[in-house]
Length: 285
Image 1 (cartoon, one colour):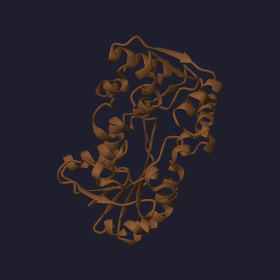
Image 2 (spheres, rainbow, N blue to C red):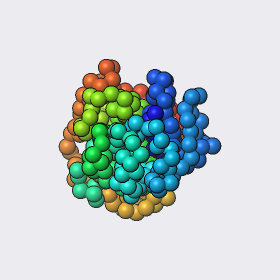
Image 3 (cartoon, rainbow, N blue to C red):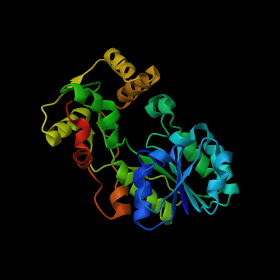
Image 4 (spheres, one colour):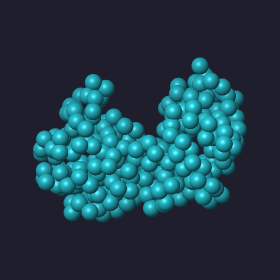
C-alpha cells in the first residue's frame, strides 16, 4: 500500500491516478474526502497530515509515502518519525529545484510550502528516500495569469524576458510513481524540467496560439506588480520574493535536465501540451 499526502493537489491527483492505472494499491489522504473524485479502487481516507499522530492509523500496512510539504507544513520531520514508527520503508518528498537557494528567493514559501524542510526530513529519516526537485509547474499559469485573461487580452507581469524550464505536473506525478515503486532513484534528488526554456512573453505567446486569442505581455513595474499580487489576495511578501528571484536570475538560462525522458522512456510534455489540455482556463469571459 502507498499513501499519498496532498492527494487532491497539483501533483497528488495525477499521482493517485497514475498509481491506480498501474494497479498499485493506493491510499489517498485528504482533509475533505467529499472533494476527492478519484478512480475506482482508490482508498480515500480523511485526515490532516500536518498533525501526524492523528493519522497514524492510516499508515497501517503502508510501505511507501509521498510527502507533500504544502499539505504537511511545519510537521514534515514529525511526519517522517511517525511513518518510521508505523513501519513505512520509503519516503518520497516533493521538494523543488530551488531548495538550496536563499529562502527569500523561494516565493512558494509564502503560501505554505516547506520544500527544504521536507527534503531534509526524508534524508534524515533513516528510511529509503527520494526527493523530487521539479522546476516551476506549467499549471502556475492558471493562478497567476488566467484571472487577467478572463477579463482582457493582456498579461501584466514583470520581467518579460525571464525564462523558466516549466514542467508538466503530470510528468512529475509519473516520476513520483516510479520513485515510490522502484529502486532506481533511491538516495537521489532529481531536478525535473520540461523540454525547453520559455520566457514569460514566450509563455503568453503559446497561450495565444493555442486559444486563438490576440494576447500581449505588458511588463509591469515592481510597484505595479505588488498591487497586482495584492489584488489576487496573496500576501505582499510573495510579490517581494518573486521580484527578488527575477532580479537575481534574470538573463540566466534555466537548467534543463533529461530526467523525465530518461525515467519515463518518452519525451517530457511541453508547455504547449499542458496549455492545450487546459485551454478552457484561459478563455475570455
